[in-house]
Image (tube, rainbow, N blue to C red):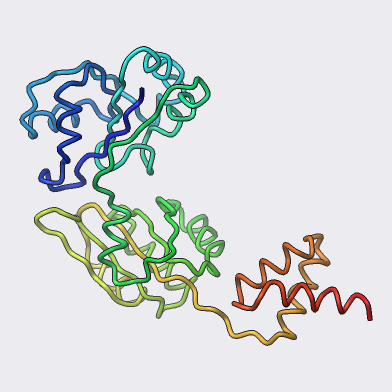
Length: 273
């Protein structure tokens, strides 16, 4: 089988007993960076030295089928540099290849920068969306944010220290300067820090320079106050562009908080007039 194994995101004390047991007995490990994995084995005091195969963004397409075939006959442990493989890390292609071959895939749960940041952010945790890294170029980044402008779920992003100030500035420009944000830095490490404030405030703070591994958590969009009449007009505008009535009602309901069924019934009634 394939065993996706979550590794510490900073504090080695977060390594689970299951992870250590699996690594102590592993014969074959696919690692995002074999040097990082060697250091992890040493730091955890694991004497076992399994065969390490590099599996990263640049070779996963070529390696996926080969490794999935190997896993049909033996256990293959998959490690990313930190956290859970496949989550903004290599592994998805391998799992897809394994699934197509009928190879069993399981996971050893463990540390997650996404969930850790969400938990300590002070922002709503009942519904959220992980968006990975924002685009590097400002034009593409702002377009990505505009696509998320009406998203009511809490948003979680990874970001590099060098782009943090620019990304927070774009969040303030697109979502509004007052949108609540938490910047979570160096989670579980010695210099862990969580900064909370408005997008504009945190953009100003980040402009002074920030270091470390960073997760940005952003408050979802507020429900816009829209009258039923205006909502009905929005539905008709979407239908006029070719959107199915039911889909148009669902989209407007999601953006306004109004009932999709009520919008649908009023639209049908309007057609009969």
